Image (cartoon, rainbow, N blue to C red; front, side):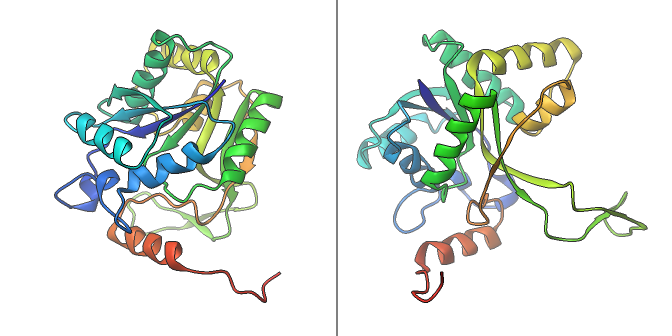
Length: 238
């Protein structure tokens, strides 16, 4: 079975708005519902779980009912950071009866333009190799800075990957990784891929992502999202 685990436990402080960014409306629909719709439409996703910010669970369920997100099966409590939220989600899935061999697509609630092809590729690559990380090769020149204002060092971009979500694993592997992290005192890794990298010894396979698969973090991101949702492809482009 293939399940989406949507991480929506953040309060969105960087956005500076009155409500969490995942519940802000774009095109008369909450951002998180746009995200859930991507998994709702995909034929190989059997169920959706959401790790939700405390106090917003009823709002989420109401929106899911309104927009006919029938695959939403579980809502779990958010944690103090991303790692803890994923921890709550995977252990919630285990307690709900999911198998260690089930594929879990961990995805940010605020990446609403996820394509069906990226979901399909994550499932296929994880089934073949055991791990799938959505990512894009870095195109920009990269500088290293200690203070955020000055730099004397560049980092070759040839080997750099900008990761996105979903990041897909078998449930048993994810739980084992989080248990190992707890034993090693790793408590605030920013993503599942960075957690696996910090633990070491796991070869993660990269699935091609998309520049459209943006994460909504700032007002500028919100403006880009609105533009992307309205743009139509040029007929002359191959």
